[in-house]
Amino acid sequence: MNTQFIKLVLQNDELENQFYAFYQGMPEYQQANRAYDTVLSQVKEKMGNEFFDQLENHIITYWSLQSYAHYLFGLGLRQEILSAFLEI
Image (cartoon, one colour):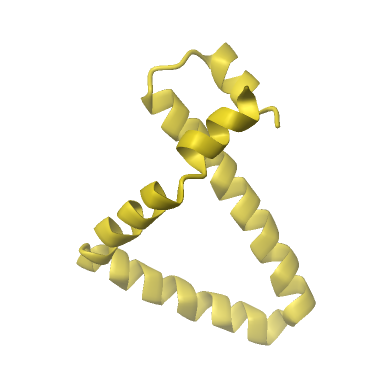
């Protein structure tokens, strides 16, 4: 059940595409994205590819789980249900 819900709602390519299109229309998002990319390039250059890859993987995991929790919370689900959905 948990995996099916995640795939249906949270790992939905159509929903991802709609979010992406929405973000592209936000000038402040575009500016933040450029600044983010600039800083990440600097980190990669100074710390090396291996460290950068580790950092990026940890950041992606952290932000993804946080986003899932916020999304589920926004659906009005209780903490017990959130915890169950995030136990994959």
